[in-house]
Image (cartoon, rainbow, N blue to C red; front, side, top):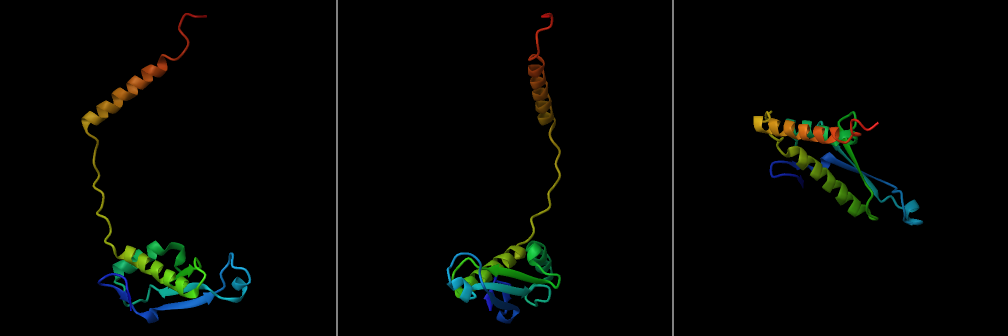
Length: 141
């Protein structure tokens, strides 16, 4: 089991790993060893996720979500398979934990006070008079 929050934990069978060759530096080793990890998690059909969390997770996943509802994460920051696998699982857990947070309360629309409107207008008038005085003097031709 992979713990995400106190209420949500994923079964190990829900996450599948495939190993691919990583790009970047590494010399001959990079051509021989498949160290990058591709993690797949079927978010749409997971029994561990409540419906509101699933909806927020699909929105948060963005381009990492396939049309079938799978989240695909690729980890190739490290040079070993084990560390890349742990990195991918950690990123999935962070994504699900962020989706499990309650949404922020809706914004209450407010109106500016009369005093703030007056301050804004007097400031505009002051700036306008400063700019009006910048031209050439009137009778100098």
